[in-house]
Image 1 (cartoon, rainbow, N blue to C red):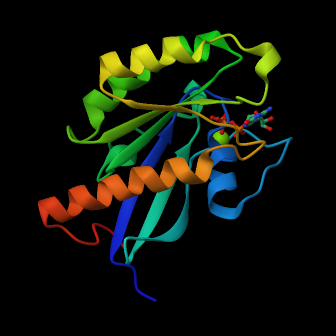
Image 2: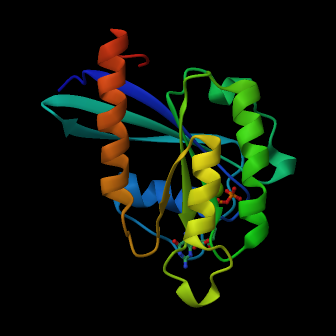
Image 3: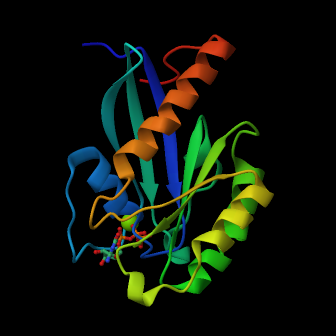
Length: 181
Ligand SMILES: Nc1nc2c(ncn2[C@@H]2O[C@H](COP(=O)(O)OP(=O)(O)OP(=O)(O)O)[C@@H](O)[C@H]2O)c(=O)[nH]1
Ligand SMILES: [Mg+2]
């Protein structure tokens, strides 16, 4: 069945924060403990029904490792949403979030919707970033915020669905359909 909308979403954040695993959890409900670092760019899709419309999310994933990052503008082109992921157990990945926000402001559409995601929330004992602190940063930067766990699957589905419902309304308001493929 044809989809009514195709939304491009990009996933960004430092290496090993769990971007690829979050994506795998969401699109195939899979998780691999020994995943390999991403090289280049990949995308995965999942179609969901929201308010009687078929919405295909085309979610782009790339390497957080600096040495693989040849992409900038092309990666962000046409993206309606971004998921900026950090690892709640590694503080520097949260501290780098401000730099990722700068990169978005430099290369992405001004109206892009950004969700800050504190991943690995299952590792409660190793927590190095308080949810309140991240929520405050998100508010100051105008981002949505949620913690998640690609390992346990916590909150991944509902969060995305909320994001899409929101985006579909916006797409309706702007009168555009099927932005890609
Ligand atoms: N405990 C736990 N481990 C996770 C979670 N998500 C990812 N991991 C682990 O963290 C490591 C890195 O995950 P990836 O998804 O490959 O990280 P990435 O952000 O895609 O990394 P790059 O591709 O290098 O940018 C892997 O060993 C995963 O198994 C999670 O929610 N909880
Ligand atoms: Mg990856």
